[in-house]
Image (cartoon, rainbow, N blue to C red; front, side, top):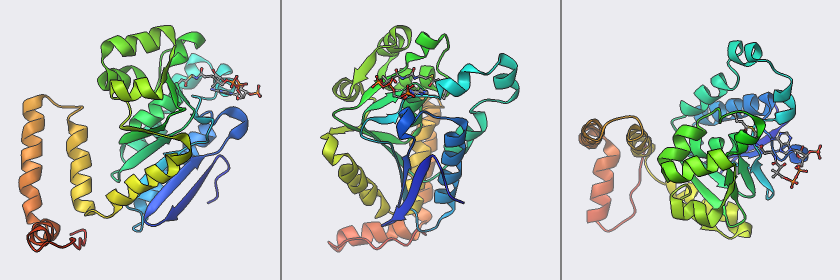
Length: 258
Ligand code: HXC
């Protein structure tokens, strides 16, 4: 049940999963990614959890896949073993909101992991990069696709082809992160955002996550139809009735996730 490469704790309805391989800048070994998938699934299955935070250390969110471990592998090893495939599949099936709290380096798989979260809050010290080009590979868990969607082709090509790092400030300007906060306040601000989400109706939050994610998969007209149907469907929920009633009665809503 325990974890060796991360810590996972639940309090105030928030699961905080903190990557913890200090000697290797939180490099994503297969053990770490396996434990992360397990911790995420446990958070999804825990009825007390309403929002998930993935964090690293002050120095590194994660400096990418574990290069030492990867250096030993052949094409047949990674292709037949579907390196990182199952862990990523688990992460993408998590229906609860996930916030990445990024301090320090988020490189390669670390940047990709942050981008697989629903949004990123960055410390002003954060540095993002896809330096796989220096190792003779391409990003492997979404970098060429998600970074391009997030910041556009020009910056994405620049980052992937030169391997340069992007500061937190540039990342915010480019739309990769939702907010930049002083390093010392990273966890407080992230937990405050998670706390806000935890107060909402889980039915509504889950629907919103699905609808926004569809924007990355569908044409505009299909996405708009998906959203409209979701909007209509939510009129069936008790929480929709409560939310509107509470507004009219000038009080806080009491959501029951129904
Ligand atoms: C294994 C790593 C590592 C990594 C750092 N370390 N990154 N070990 N895999 N990705 C280890 C170092 O070997 C070193 O161990 C210790 O962490 C501290 O790192 P230093 O390099 O001494 O620190 P510093 O000079 O401050 O530089 C920090 C750094 C640099 C800029 C983050 O370590 C770096 O460039 N790391 C590699 C980043 C990278 O190329 N990522 C992409 C990986 S490929 P020792 O034992 O020497 O003290 C990838 C593919 C994605 O992610 C595929 C899908 C997941």
